[in-house]
Image (tube, rainbow, N blue to C red):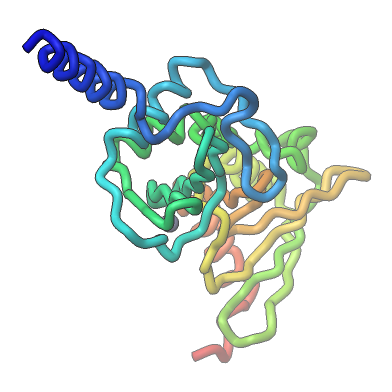
Length: 238
Ligand SMILES: [Zn+2]
């Protein structure tokens, strides 16, 4: 009887030991998270690392690899897991499984990965590297206006009042992140000429790092259209 009891106890201990320690996803000793394209290690607090590993261990996994892009990957003790920040999908490449996190979890992960900081980098015009030295003092503005005829309409703004108004809009407007690609059919742009310095600015979206940013109002575009009309951009155009 004693023997059987001891045997049972051993079995129970075995079972509980297996149950407790064998979480499928565990951090590797070195390195954890990397960018997919440049294989740069992503610095992360240990509590954030725990948060992500916990998510992986508690997730409900589908037995397929989601056909999805990947901008980060996680190197774990036994698996390589890829992550797509735009949709929140994890692909466990090693085991052919996938899971998609809830929206609030995706946002938290993206904050951990510093994606929000990068997204909010451009607030005002001088946050763009190419416009960082720009001032309001402008001698003239050359416009390449897209009037949808296939060939652009060119004109130059030299009137100081109009220039003042345009530069005021450019310096007071804010910018919105449009993502890594823009699908805007309008190709109007302006050359802001300040002595020796010339700044090329798109009226739809300007790029900083990997993202495009558009003006948050249409004020600049409206003003340019008004001047383009005066200059004859729509004459003879349907
Ligand atoms: Zn995706």
